[in-house]
Length: 275
Image (cartoon, rainbow, N blue to C red; front, side):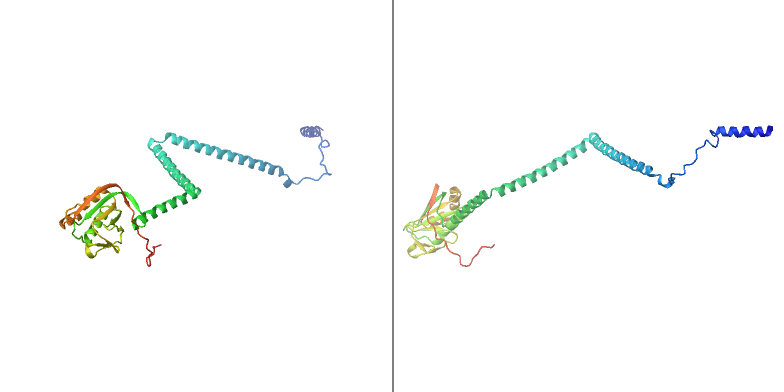
């Protein structure tokens, strides 16, 4: 009996430790299906998406901090740079500024040229007209005016060779004579150009470009008066040769010399400009 009572007390203490009798323990519900264990991790996937978003925000924050630190490091580098390095950086910046300014000036000049087409054409026409006038003076088709010399060659009854007149013309050209004409005592005037020729005529006359001139002769020359006068007075020159032949040469410096004799323009038959 004592052994049976002890067993009963032991069973009762075990029931008390489980919080009641076997009848009080909940019975499993048989009406609702049990959820499989492998379908429960959906909450875990939601937590993984939120974590990825958090990591992305942290990465962006870290990149921003890195950029800011790098900028601060650059500023600190300039602040702590040596004076020579700062001078070099400043020199490079100034050189770049000069190059950019030159490009700006070139573009502005191109713009002005493009927008001023009319003015450009007028300037080109003016330059062409000026060039045509210069060529007309050199070819003898236009009259001329300017400072120069009046040269009188008097043979004093002795005939003067055409070579003496030609020497005078060459010496004047060498001394800077630009435009000249020769007038005979018979009133015939000839414009002297690069193609002019001089030959001896009958009775002591001189033929210039096919026209007969009788002495005394007068040369009108446009150029620097003092230079041309000095050139004619060199030893063995025109003045000396005419004086030895018994003639006389006089020269007058003029501030204004007019050369009115002109030539008719000639048409070239064979020569053409090289283009």
